[in-house]
Amino acid sequence: MRRIALLLSLLAGGCGEDQGSGEIVGSLVVPDCESRGDEDRWVCLPDVPADECAAFDLDVDFFALERFEDAAFIRMQHGGQALATTDGLLIEIRDVRLLRGQLGQGLEIGPERDIRAALVLADTCPESTQSFDLRGRIVFTDFGIDKGDRVAGRVEELVVRDARTGALLGRLRGSFDFTLRRGPPYQRFIDT
Image: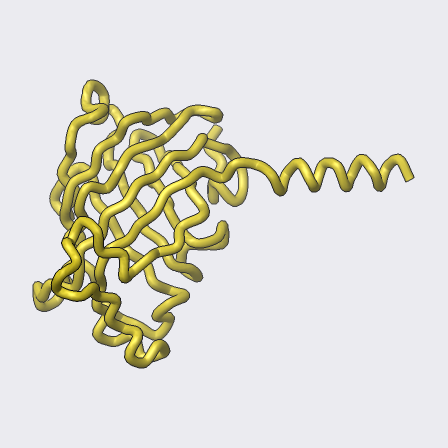
């Protein structure tokens, strides 16, 4: 009985653990999102200002930072499963040393920049072959790379275009605030 009580208390403690907070919202059109029918267009009425539009909500509830040598990848996604099976936003920082002295400042996001982004809609639009071109600005208010460090900031604007045609598909914005954890599911590969 003692062992069962101990196990239940450990499980209950794990359920209440803070997983971080944040959101990625805005407007988005995904032309080949066939599984959702007419729901491929998450747009606000014309009288809603862009900075208030939340027709599209990525519904993020899982946050992680993974390091590979000098690079770091921030995953903001729905659930802790592999990003290839859910919806999420991946922010790649090619060299974290570039963030020194840059906290609180707007940094450019783009394919040719030091910070790049990828939008994955594997759950919402699993059959989609849409390729997104993401450009915008991000501000880090806290950025640590060790277990227990805080990672926080905001995506001021993320312009979403069709990577093939250049057509505007939407505008996203959001925030994130989480404590860095180690091990699965927060890290796919453990660095030593």
